Amino acid sequence: MILSCPHCNKMNRIPIEKIANSPICGVCKQEILSLPITPNEAALDELIRDSILPIIIDFWAPWCGPCKMFSPTFQASAVARSNRVIHIKIDTEQYPGIGAKFNIRSIPTLVFFKGGKEVERVSGALQATQLNQYIDQLIR
Image (cartoon, rainbow, N blue to C red; front, top):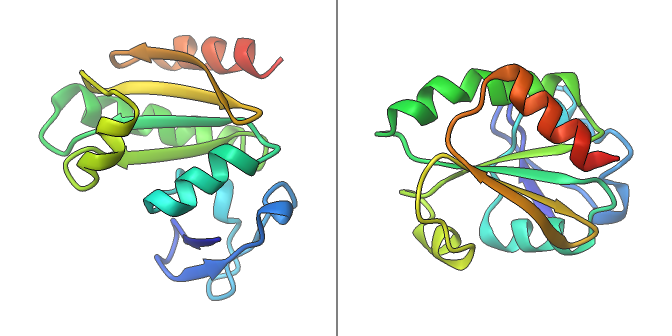
């Protein structure tokens, strides 16, 4: 799978079986999963289907005020759970097909996957304590 580094935006080839081994960007040497990533549709499908790490996706849009307010909270969660939970941000304006595929009707919407299956979703911006409780409850 090919993922863009969230630190330097360079593309990196990462075998899915090594996604849980703290992949490092070949260019900037930062941990790729230490910030939210934005995979293309094919990489997203592969991550959901084959990743042994749990995944949380933030569906958002650039014009959405609550989405913008929630973004630092989601990023802080990615930093705190680096290489334990994959944090993904999907811009529903840039990738409307992905939003439609996951039946996203309002934003922001968080969708949580574990073992290739959707296990939970919540709409609306969460406060940091709410997000932390939500993720911690779902990764048990």
